[in-house]
Image (tube, rainbow, N blue to C red; front, side, top):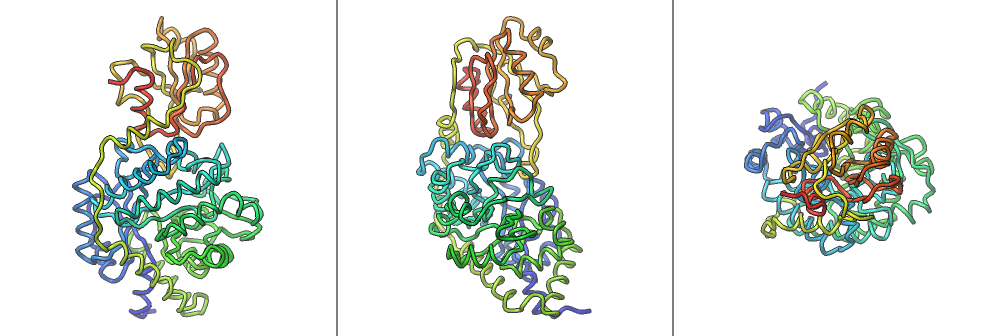
Length: 483
């Protein structure tokens, strides 16, 4: 059955698609010409700054007001710097410093980088209050565990980013910080009352609304007190009653990627998820990273069919397109932006390093980096001290397969510095460090979300509050082993 051209254009106007590779395929350009809201860029689309600028110029040559989005949080989640690690520390480091002017400056710099690359919508900042130490998906992406601290930095981040003319998208409403599962892989549950959400999770979102955030992203999390069995992305009570009604948000509501299990598996597919999200009040739908023409056409068909059979009111679809178009017009308006400040990121990272104990016995160490996994949001981004070392030897080991005796023998008379991320989460990592420290000078560097765990007998515990290129350099300097 043929789709009405006007209805097809409306459906396209709610979609953020994606494509593989460093250049745009013809189908991706053709959809823009037909009215597609825009595309999201991922690490697979990024080679270097010049290439990205050329790619975005090509996309914008088809339609000047196209939204070109990216997840650039400036910390452990980076796309522009996915080959090296971000030159900026992330939110956990900025929250530790607790200087909102610094946060504003870092986000203005990130915005300047994005604007120079031709990107006009940043799917950031993360403004979740990370109250679960073992949160597998937020962690160092959060400014902290204190709602008021997160609130003041959330507002500063929005102001900084948008000062460069890049639309901000604060995430993940109504708050992903209390989860202990990853919504990329399943539907997490936050078992909290609305009163608790208002006290703990929602203040940063009130702040970003007041700061004028162009967009807010919905979370694929289940909050039984509000959403019953559904994710927030499919809940009118969350998106309309709470976000628009109670908190007065008038900008674009953007979904997290609909390909994620927290959405697609719940709805019965990406197309069905798109219909449910639009019906609930979402305006701009992130499809995800794995997108082709067939998938986009299937989603268009689902949306059109839902309008035809009355499940999705036409006026709701028109409202979604209008809000998205309003954001696109804002993002297409040229603005002046600050010039690059290459010292800013490192300066900020230095301020975030915290040292407990004494480094006196850790001069000229053997560095042992614990191999760790990565979240889907982070991807495979380099981390650690290796790029910054002055010739200091480094080993990479899997904690569960490593021998403390062999590492001590390798160190000889040298002290040992163990570098890890979320080290406390794995018993093998804790056991290895404590075995090393039992009879040898050992220091520990934690580059993930810090916990209360401290290894027995360690001489020092260094916390960087992130694992970016800037964080690694700052730690190497503190240890006196930076080149």
